[in-house]
Length: 244
Image (tube, rainbow, N blue to C red):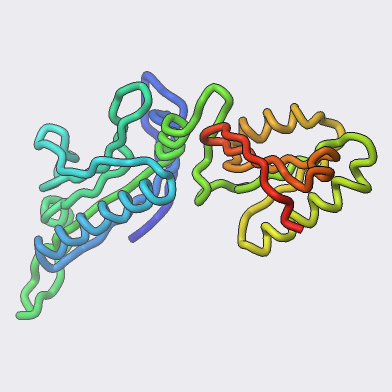
């Protein structure tokens, strides 16, 4: 079974996304013939969580086995991935449990084995939650807002045309051309054509939203046949030849 479900816990001290009264989580449950099969499943899921967090969320984690005191109540073994946050504390980001036959014996969950004898199943349980969002904010955010890793950013590149002079006739067509070329490369692109906000306002807004790359283009850039590219993670500004 693999499902997404809402969970409610009576938390006395809450922190947004990290420890809340209600949260959304993904949980899975499997049943197996042997301890070895259940253990393989437990470790496989742990590796999937580790791969997702490191490759998609760009957060390095430490994976390992929980102590007997820290393991899930009723589990034979609990494995987890944890990451160090900017405040110096460790955050548990996902768990995978080998439940053994603890629960199958209580609830009489059995199967017929190869010798046509009834045996109790060996179970696993694993899950992650919206705590991953909190980890993402803590790991990549700063005083200006979010910093989305490119793989999961809803918008990977934002293009901000500088509204000066006859920008609709001179700047906007080129900005749309750049947008089209970037989309052809498979990137998620947003062209910010809003007229009610200044370029500076737009810069701050998209920085707050965590867009990985910002492209600026104005009348002076057209004269120099260039665009300005700004990285969200480093703030580094580069001048790139216009892709005409």
